[in-house]
Amino acid sequence: MKTSSSHPSIWKRTAVLGSVCALSVSLVAFTAAKDASSTKAEPLRIQVSDAPLSTAARGFPSFAPVVKAVAPSVVKIAVSSEAKVSRMEMPEGMDLRRFFGPGFQMPEEFQQGQRGQQQRRMPREQGVGSGIIVTKDGYILTNNHVVDNANTIKVTLTDGREFNGKVIGRDPKTDIAVVKVEAKDLPAMAFADSDKIEVGDMVLAVGHPFGIGQTVTTGIISAKGRATMGLDYEDFIQTDAAINPGNSGGALVDVEGRLVGMNTAILSRSGGNQGIGFAVPTNLARWVMEGLVNTGRVERGFLGVNIQDLTQQLAQQFKMDSAKGALVSGVSPDSPAEKAGVKSGDVITEFNGKPVSDSRHLKLQVGSTTPGAAVPMNVLRDGKTMSLSVTVKELPGDKVADSTPAADNADDALHGVGVSDLDKATREQLKVPSQIKGAVVSSVEEDSVAYDAGLRQGDVILEINRQPVKNAEQATALCAKPESKISLVKVWSSGGSRFIVIDESKAG
Image (cartoon, rainbow, N blue to C red):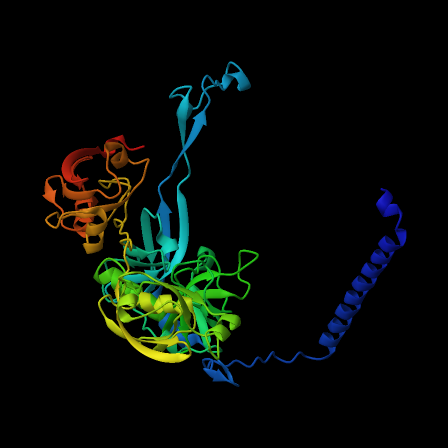
């Protein structure tokens, strides 16, 4: 070929060098053989140390003791969701035989007719994330995006045990979820006070990246108080410990093995680790988790102000030395803030004994305040500091957190239905009378038999097969092992009750 013939010297030089190398090997082998024949070889002596690695060998610590302590508390969470039905519009009179010939056999999903919507079932979706065991009786902390829309949840421990998981509650506003497994004496991880960590502290990230198995990486805390994902409530810890897809829901621990954060997201141009990872601090995660477990929802405080960040120019206008605080641009009528005496133009500098750095941190501080609590607040007005007291109310219109059945499979009754407890806020939102007891339907898959039977989001399930339903847990239990594929369900909606029949034998 033209390319080879244009550079004959290169090929030649390569061949020559190859001969030299072969010759060198032959000469060495010959010399070694000659020496061996004249002198007896000394026995091979290798120094072996059986002592375990020191935890502080020459100033470089080993984290093995920490990893051994925390690894059993970090689990793998495998989730799967039902195959979805894709609906495709077929033009009136369209016949695929026109394109593929008279012998073409129409697929089954297109044999329903030649006009209107045609259906095609999409593949079942699967994913892998991580979780943190936080109590000995099986409560697991993870990310909302790990278990969102999951029909089945499998939790695998480091010792190989596998459990079916049940979503106790989800909070999309912080991307936090709580999963429960039925087990005892599990290795729970201790929490640290995330407010006390500092930039530069060393941390370890433990999780299941890409589903390859539990992996430990190390780094430092790079920054605090980051807001990157556009969530309603964000206060992320930034770290350079390697975090990859699958690490979501895993643990960020300090060198004493205490949980300081839950790994949640990465900032990456490649899709993999580039040294910028984010974790939800434990103080925020703990507050959300306790609300989901204790009441089934997250109760957030409400102040009733429109706020914005301060710039240097605004700070000068409001006679401030620095641009720290939250500037009040409006006060809602009859709100807690108005009753406390807050006015437009005030700068909130301290709330409940903690300094306010910007509007986002004030939102976090108010949101985590128990509704009904009276808390002190400092505002700067016309260059002078004023102390006020405000009684925080509950954030109006806050959606109840979802719950889903444990190990929801095709044999369950009410397959594809999510339920939640009927609490005070939900009653007010749906206008459910106080005497109505049951479980509110939080979601219904549109391709489910329950949806076809008429069950809708916002309906309240009163009975399942003539058994009264008091809460979401009881509804889940009644659906777990049905005696028949046919279920008689009594629901309340729009001011009245009705019965519907759900026949799971028609599924698919």
